[in-house]
Amino acid sequence: MDNLTEALQKLKLASGDNTAHGVEICLDCLLKALASTNTEASMKIQEMGILPLFPNLLNPQSSCTPKVANIIAELAKNEFMRSPCVDAGLIPPLVQLLNSTDQEVLLQTGRALGNICYDSHEGRSAVHLAGGAQIVAEHIKSLYQNTEPENEKLLTVFCGMLMNYSNDNDSLQAQLINMGVIPTLVKLLGIHSHNASLTEMCLIAFGNLAELESSKEQFASTNIAEELVRLFQKQAEHDKKEMIFEVLAPLAENDESMQKLFEGGKGSVFQRVLSWIPSNNHQLQLAGALAIANFARNDGNCIHMVDTGIVQKLLDLLDRHVEEGNVTVQHAALSALRNLAIPVVNKSKMLSAGVADVVLKFLQSEMPPVQFKLLGTLRMLIDTQAEAADQLGTNGKLVERLVEWCEAKDHAGVMGESNRLLSALIRHSKSKEVVRSVIQGGGVKHLVTMATSEHMIMQNEALVALGLIAALDLVAAEKDFVGASLVSVLHKLLSDERSAPEIKYNSMILICALMGSEPLHKEVQSLAFIDVVSKLRAHENKTVSHQASLTEQRLTAQS
Image (cartoon, rainbow, N blue to C red; front, side, top):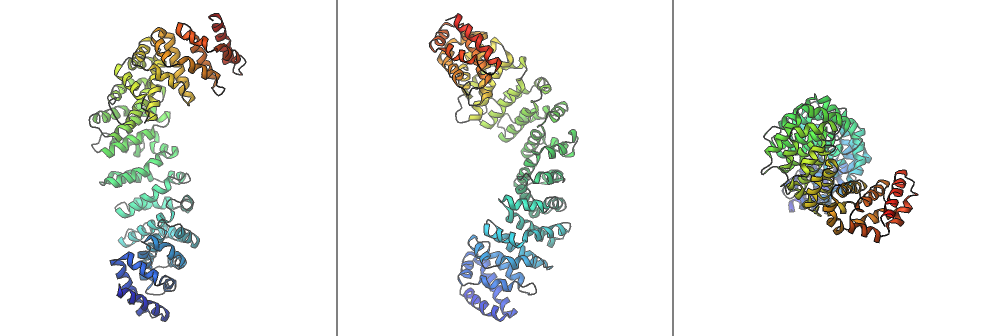
């Protein structure tokens, strides 16, 4: 450290005399000290007021310039040195050096600017004001086709600099997009896919930029997906595959990009993705299943995929993950099946292919994400499919598990989906056996609670299911209806001005159905329903006002 102090004092004197040789010896000593104990040496340099000397030493004509830029790059590895570098006025001369033609000057300057920008608002602002990002973007555009090792090193530094400059800053990222860096980086990725550190820089840059809405159009105009899929295929490293995946995911969420890749089911990316599903690599399986879930976001794609046999591939994949399975693969494959089951024409085909049977194998799963997707898939499958709803609704194990999950208060999504599936089994089967199965399994009280949900669609589904229970087997449900205070729930729904017209309508239908039970009839009388119902005769919705008249007649006749 004594040598460093001496060198710093000499540097102060030498920089005043401008003797290049003396300055160079001092700079070498500084670099040596920074290489052995960077933090301590940086503090010493800061204490002795050396930073303000550097702007004059960053002279494009001087042979010392690359060393000075290298020292600044080393100093800026320390968070506490970044603002002082900006305050010492180092950014404008560094940005000027970006116009140099000397490879070493460019490399060290790129490192220095990149390190000063890392996690530093002051650093980024200063580089922005000096126009540094624009010059670096131009360099990348002019150099990206050159595959010489030295050039690749420079490109890696420049990409890293732009990444540090724009990271977590939407306006700076938007600026880079406007400069047109995306198409350049995509081409660069294609040419330099053999270079691990350069591809990593590109991937991080894509990951940052892909989140921005304004990037979607630019990405869609390139062949980024093909490049990423090719790169994914080549990768052996788990982490790198993960990175590629994180970039692909937001891109696939863009409908325009997705359709371009799908190409009516003939796209090369889509075909490649399909080939991953039967592989033995969990990551490839996951990538394939997630990609299909993304492609299955419009009816046309879903219908085409079901017609070309993708369902069987997904079922085979799920079968391989039943015992000790990979949860992320299970979740992704179930997501894909759920999306494929949305178009009405696909439901019967998927049921015939045995989808419900395979999905039921995961009933024992203790993983909420898998439970959630399993429930959603079954609910989509039975929509309008009476026979399937009947079969599943009389499956004691399924009903038992649904009732158990209806109490999963720690997992609101699982709880909501369980309630919705319980209701759907009754609504789509309209079967007395299914109603009996739900009553015996203890599901009625959950449907009554569901009728008080904050989501109107769930309230309505619950009321329709409860209406069917009352119509098909009121005697068997009577005790549960009383125990769950159904009558008082209906009174609240009818009295609440915020209740939607269909909620009011279905509540009145249910009241009429309950009149056939003596204990429930008594409860209806004790709560003065006639007052609430007679007010609804003036309701602006004609269906509601008409049903209010009918309900009032029923209540009056039986009072």
